[in-house]
Length: 246
Image 1 (tube, rainbow, N blue to C red):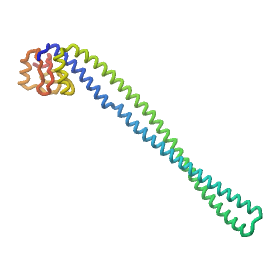
Image 2 (cartoon, one colour):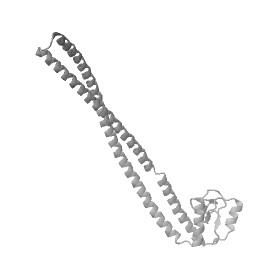
Image 3 (tube, rainbow, N blue to C red):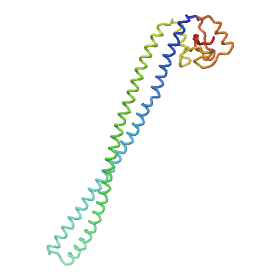
Image 4 (cartoon, rainbow, N blue to C red):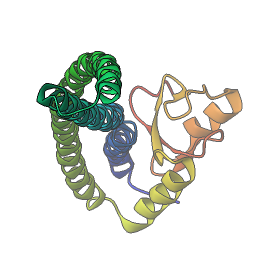
């Protein structure tokens, strides 16, 4: 294939735009800001689970405290009833003895229940503090997530802007290249996954970074300036300039 020597040099501009677009696409795929969002989101989910566990533990303790309070009230009511009977003087000596024994038992039972209630109240206080701490941690994680998402969105917007600029620049360069040469370039670009042309600089292909051997260099040197020559190693179009070392 033949193409104007100066038109071939435009392929370097096209390749530069393709490199920029490839770098932007890679940046989007490996965006550290996106990874940061995932990490913070995982932490926020973990802290949300901590909130649920802390609230569940506190509710369980609250129910147990209420149960003990009810038991204490039942014992007190029974003791008050027995005391009232004793104070009335309307019971027999045996009933009086039984009531006194029951009152002693109720007093011990009430003391045990109140001790249990006090212990549970201390546990509940600790559990409620854990709930507050869990909520504070989750709110902090939510705020961190919002910040991380904003940084990610800003980075994505920057990538989108850059992509749009380079796509427009590429289209402008491509419009100045004849269809056959552009089609060849694009076919090679698809094969390499990067660019379809590279500068020959100091006898080295700037695409694969391999220096041409004597036979290859002689073939390029002797080729017509308008002949489209390609790197035998990577297949890219070799664009000859004053820096080619020919």
